[in-house]
Length: 310
Length: 249
Image (cartoon, rainbow over all chains, first blue to last red; front, side, top):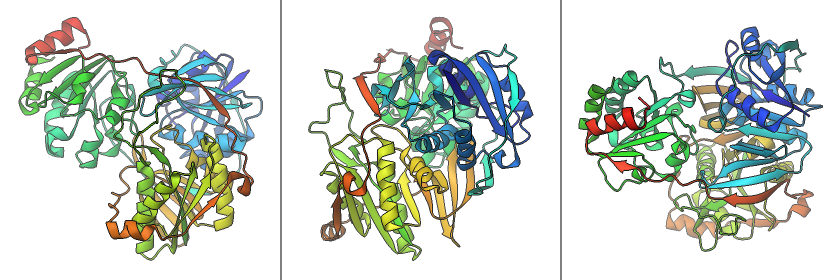
């Protein structure tokens, strides 16, 4: 049995979720190959070779993999799929975009966002915004899976796996990237942060969000997140959103400020180790999942908190 | 230009679902059902393209039980011109739905399929990408802006690090994210009008599609409950707890 894990990277470095995906592959068991498709991506390939559990890194280096479009990556994976019992990708926007396309061409079901491995063909995945956990068994020859990174501990980097070059597939030329605006931040990545400070509608404005939460995040070395309400209201960009359809996070500490706690938001953060809720409404649903709840005016509480930590 | 929009009947997003005691699934008896919110955004986008004179016809498709007719009527009340119900009692999985849509694309020849990025029941996020693959069409998922011109779609996508813009040739599949638009409320006159719009019913066998599920659900369980913690009186107590009890800062 061999497992192909599709690495997510930016040509120079791996995205953290790749390490959790390899961990899920280890739970399934078998020879693990990591596919790095990119353009001038040898740095990412070198890093891939250090991941524990990986026996072989396959590198496809070509200009048309620069932006890793689903169309081109699918063609490459399909050309190299023979012999693999499982094909895994992280359940990030990258993996979610790609994996179903691969599965459809292999004529197999895709299993989304697994949080547990029961056996080589049986997996646990959340449904209904995490309000239920389904155990599903696949009857397909090849299992195409996306992995929820928060459910698997990242593998260490103490390995020196072999790196092989593979030939690129032809450019499908179906899709051209014309622009990419990545939010620039000195803060840790939301999906990998140990502490997250997250803000909701209660902050009232984007200006308040930044003036109140940024000093706190700076003090704690935290990433910044937000509820859907805060994103929809334009306080912060879309990639801040934590929830059922945004990012799923599970940091050591999640501080929810002015977030009421809709089930769609809770779906994205309730696996956090410690949850702190600050809200003026004592009946806000967020308090039902919070380890420490503080009922109060966030405009007074947050500055006090900035003063008290560190 | 024809636009095809698949719509799914799901448990209303305000309902807190309960897992059945025997672990076979979630309890759907007497639960409010609605159109999947992402599909509502897809219909709205298609109708706006028609209102802008870019699209000529908006066809809503729903696959599932007979009651999906209601979902199609909702789509037509928003502005879809007609509906197609692919009726079956089989529990449809994304690959099966993608194949049904593929068969309908062969029949209807749409230039673009706009679908919701995921359904809020199974949270799969697969069908659009699968349809694009089966059709060998380009795809632009998680769209927050769609511009159609000169046989191309320019789509802004919500990705983990921010936003990106793709230019794809048509025909293509676009899947909607939350911020693509804000769907209108169907007005009473439009709800009445929707009742008179054409709604065809076909069976998977008529389309030559095998919809047998590939995944078997062995059990459905409640996730471990997170119990509510304590209320702290002030910031000093909170910081003390975080430092000395939880030891996270």
